[in-house]
Length: 303
Image 1 (cartoon, rainbow, N blue to C red):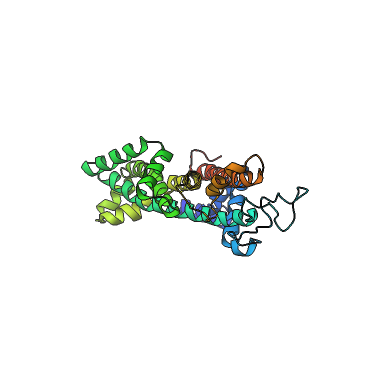
Image 2 (tube, rainbow, N blue to C red; image 1 turned 60 degrees about the vertical axis):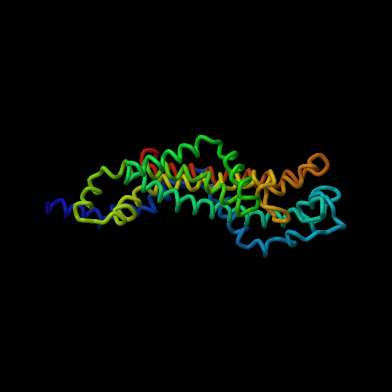
């Protein structure tokens, strides 16, 4: 035994110590070039959202009546004053896109935070109490998943009324089943392991067993799901805004911008193209990063 300990100490002294978990995670994450590209785009979006007031050349709701439907700068009639053109009432497209990034990041953060908080709590209860309580929770979740997510969000918003915060609440309810099912499945696989049994034998109370013993070992799939649900939150909120059930004018939300500009798609392509591209790039970036997180956090998928 002493010889084995001396060998381990010698290896650590010679530089063979096991890598730090964060370093090991990053080494696997950076192998996925798409995930790195997605992370770079997300970091850029966060910076744009934080410094939107500084980066935007104009106030997002300011109307310039002398520049209605002005084309982008590379067009013959464009100018650098409105680099990406203006909409039908003279608002600068670039400024509205920049402030729209702030709205989208805010929506994603709130929706995912609510989904994690409520979904993890319900999933823990369903996993630790698989009897009547667990059955009731999972049957409600199954009923929610039986409906298409966007249709369910539309029904909820139609009941509570249109608006950005109501749309966020509806999307948070829509993404909830994924967190509940993932948490319950992870808890059911962890609760039968020896370390949980040993913790029970020490007399640990149920809250400690749930939140300090089992939950930390269930976080990997939840982190991956959170990154994917972030893109779902942005996309569904934009869809509700496009239908007139989400953010209301003059809020610079990308889906609302698409809805307002749809009638000008043939004569002013930029008022539709740029908000659509913003939604596409943002959703793709979060999906790519989620794919990289899955590869880096799942031991079975590590290269």
